[in-house]
Each structure stands twice: as C-alpha cells, then as structure tokens.
Length: 475
Ligand code: AMP
Image (cartoon, helix red, strand yellow):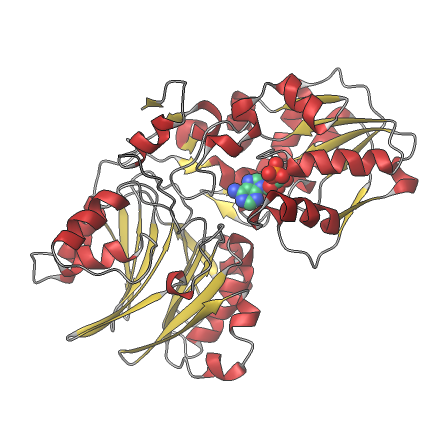
C-alpha cells in the first residue's frame, strides 16, 4: 500500500505568559510580532484562576480578534497563543490552535510548532486503543500520550510522551497551575524565555516577540529541555540527554524576523553575512547595482553590496498589503500573487546590469517573475544571486516543503534553472558559506540542501523513498 503523508502542523508561532494581569492582551501583542510565522489561523487560551478559556479562528490575528470582546473575555493572569502556517487544503478551524481539552479532572491547553515524523504510527496505535482525534494535525497526539501515561505525576507522563513523539516540536502546554514548554532533542525550532519588569515570565518562538512586550531575554530553551513556568518562576528540567542541536537553517535564511536572535545569532546579521560570503564566492559577476527582493532578502542584499563594492539600489518596491505568495495553493494564484506584490522601479534599473539578491528559490515562481519584472523595467542584464544553497530536499521537521516534485533544484541543474527563470547568470551560496554566515558550526540542519537528515524519518521513510532516486542519508 502506498500512502501520502502531509502534515498539517507546520511552521507556526508560539507565545505564552504566566503572571501578568493582562495575559491574553500581552499574548496578542506577542503573536502579532510572530504573525510572519503563520497567517492561516490564530488563537489564545487564557487561564483565570485555574479556569481555561479560549478563542481561535481562521485568518490573521487581527481578524480573529476583530471583536474586542473576544480578547476581553479571555481574562486571567496566564495565557498561551498560536499563529498557524497555511498549507493547501488544510484550512479548517479544527486545526487552529491552541487546542483546549476538557477532561473530567481538569483542562489542558496545547499548541505546537514543528512536525512529527512518527504521526501515522502513533495515531494508528492510539486509535486502535480507542483514541479519537478531532483534527488532522499531529498536535493532539501528545495530549493522548500524556493522558495514557502510567504515572500519577503529570510531569512523568509529559516526559514519557515527549520521548515517544519524534521529529520537530516546540510545545506549549497549559494546565490550571502551570505552563509547560518543551523542545525536541535536535532543537529544530527556536523557543526563548523572557522576563517582564513585574517578574512575570514569557516564552516565545522568537525573541522579537519578547521585545515587543518589553521582556528581557533570559535563555533559549535547549534541545531535550522541558520547562515549567508557574507561580514559583521557571524550572528547567530535561526529558532526554540524547540531544544534538540542529536548528533549522531555514529559520536563519527566510523564516525568522531580522530583529530576532536564535542561540545568540542575530538573524539580520546572519543574512548579511550570507550576502557578504555570496559576493566573495562570486567575485566575477560584472554588474552596476545590487537590488534586494523586499523584504526577506534586504539583509543579504546589503551584505552583498557591501562586500562587492556595488551600490545598493531600491530597484524593486513591495506592496506591503499583499500576503506571502508561497502560501497560495495553486501555481496560477502564486504567480498572480507575485505580480501584485512587487514592482520594478524603471528609473533605477533601466539600462543597468542588475544583481538581484533573493534568499531562496523553492519552486522558482518568484525569481522568474522578478527577472521578468526587472527586464520589463529596462534592466540590461539580471544576475540572480541566492543567499542559500539550492533547495533540493524536503523538510520533515516543520517547514512546508515535503515533496521533491515541486522543488526546482531537485529536478534541474543550476544552468537549467538559470534558463527557466530567464536570468543572465545564477549563483547560489555554498553550504560551507551558509554555515560560516550563521556561525553555529554543525549545529544547524542543512537537510534541504544536502539530503542528510539528523534523525531517522520514521513514517516518512517509505513516502520519501517513493519519489526519490538518490540516496537518503542519516547521521
Ligand atoms: P518560489 O517562488 O516557490 O521559488 O519561492 C521562493 C520564495 O519563497 C523566496 O523568495 C522566499 O522568500 C520564500 N520562501 C522560501 N521558503 C519558504 C517557506 N518555507 N515558506 C514560505 N515562503 C518561503
């Protein structure tokens, strides 16, 4: 039997606070700073003296909470919240988090960023034992595992459950008297703890969300850690010592906000380094100006311009009111999305040999369209430089790239891609250059570029090999 696994719980943003009178409002602000991590749905669960209440819906955070009363009713001094990333065909309120579970002996709120690799096996096993799932996301699995634990101590059951799920996960779990946060043994996703002036603790997917609520950074949650935040403060424990940090390189390349820091590395600085190293690796490009693709490539473009000595110009302008194109379900809509989003600035690029810097090429839609835009605006030549290596392998830990079919670099050489997107030359950053730019050595996951996965792929091994001629290697 063949089957297609498509996870529904990818790249998301998490925020939690314990010990603040306006906890839900603070969570709203925190999630607002994390909106780039997911635009499909959002939700908040608050905790008012042990009573958990929630509100969630499809759409941007501001749409979900457009009626002020929805936020006001989330009273209490603790809250967790979630923004969810969109993938085709998954737009169902059932999958919008946080999930609120009502048991005879208590309530739990749960949200998740990442993607499990043994979902199918665990779901099958749990369903055979009577479990019923309400969503088709993999997040509910953790709750079932915890409830089926053998210990009378919640934390023992949480730790056992965390050792059973595999893949990429950052969890926030709220009970009536605490928030529990946990990170997978490879730390694929970022998660940071901060402290507010009133002594309350906050936890967020990215440090930009700590900044926005005025929290000072305390620490990153480390791989294999389980953290309890309650009236006594923060207690950091571990559920496994079998850890190996492999933070997702796509967080640095594209996903995280430039003002966030992950393991002490500022995202803007890492991207600027990527651009600088890319320039050093391609000194022979003959051009007049450097143009970055707004917004995600501006840091890399500034690094490229600085290192190449070429002037940085605003040759492309972005309409700030159009959402990301990547999330559109069809190719036609994606192309329309790029057209609405970007315009070439004729008086800047006309007659010029342009170096166009972008952060990545996934399907090639964006680059192709932008090369055309720049040429239509009169550019004499367009040399495309990409501040990441060719993306040729899928991700199973939480980035929405799970099929090789759509990845242009999985199916074409650099010369062929150059031809397809219509550029005069095309250059990618090397994997070593990427590692140097981020500066965390081998502690980053580069599987999209080299097909080397830090963990076994469990349920995906079969699915993955079906469409894969090349070898898959594991650490
Ligand atoms: P494409 O047009 O399919 O080649 O997509 C490339 C563009 O999508 C790049 O300009 C990136 O800024 C953006 N991008 C890269 N990775 C992702 C991702 N995982 N989710 C959403 N957008 C992405």
